[in-house]
Image (cartoon, rainbow, N blue to C red; front, side):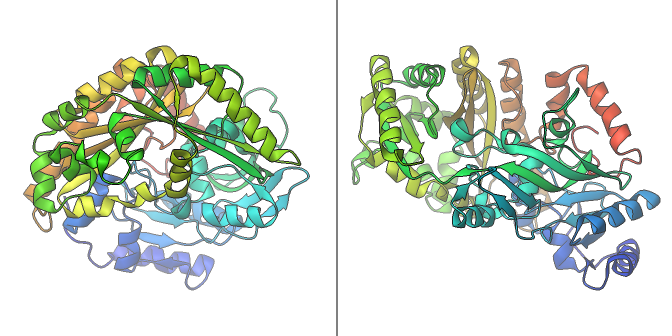
Length: 521
């Protein structure tokens, strides 16, 4: 473990000088504040580093290219010298995917954000990959269009980050994941050559799909053509309550197999359900006090006291009423938008009634819609109070879903408090989005031993969770990517395919400079 970040060393200063000469003044920096900003993303383990005031893996220099041509020049410069290049979007990733474990050049792509070219009749938008997600959606909305891609990180993520990790948005059941929206890309490989895929069906292997999800290890994506849609003119929202999570899963499966395509279909566990449908203080009165300390973000000592007994907290959740809330929504566009959305919604209600669904009316759905991004910005007080908060999104087929849910809850229960919801549902299966809340203990600032203890507790939680997920037949990630802390489990998922991935790495990046140390490449 290294200490607080100090001034750049001779290597960083030399790289800054050479890259400034290559790209122009202001295009490179090795100022401590810039190196610190590029030394981690929002991986909760890295947030423990930030709280402790340490930066174990700083880059040597930060570079801001303003065009694909400048990316080419930087990559060729780095390849000639064997210097690592780590593409950086907005730093909102939660898996350590942009941590520069071998130093080198942090390639901040946010200057690749020129005006998008929107073709609404053709339903396409051409965009540079440094474009902020919310800004892109605002520009599309002004043209009467939408991408339909609404990740919780939309305010602080970029198109390039979405492509690198195979991102999913909250309306994926209707619009698909980002890999369903991208039609073509431009990218720069590890030799500095530009790759351009065609906006036509691929003949033979699909190079586009090969690069998506590669997390900057095969090529640096600089431009993309994405599919867009007319903005929805109407939306129908509902909350439905099932007697149990299992009945809710069965209902969600029946819904997706019916041919209906809801824009929103999110199923919550009993604790989230109780909180979501509460009226005034009634629901909190029914929540045991230690659980209230957790869900209300109680002060440091109360929260730490509750999290010292995670197994007890998880058993308290099991004692709650077993009801499970489904947030359901449909969208419509065109002249009959309201009628179309309402008709699909009412069909869904009739379909789900035999599965035990109780219609709660529009209020729960509208409440979710109004607050859908807030949860992503509530972690800081928890870290300040001595806890860590993290999420794990795995996916599997419908027949394995209940067992996966139980297995991960059981494995994580001794390490952290666990909540879950089911989202991103498809014909074949569904993703489970687990939330873990664990004890990071005390104030880690300036205490290496205490930081090491917190990291050990965090790692033990994740090892248990990922082992259980793999044993249950789940994929390691549905939309957050792999980064640093999941990659050790990749051989369990890909088997012999790891040899082929390494062969691809050698073909795309023969000098091994692109985001080294990720995907076991």
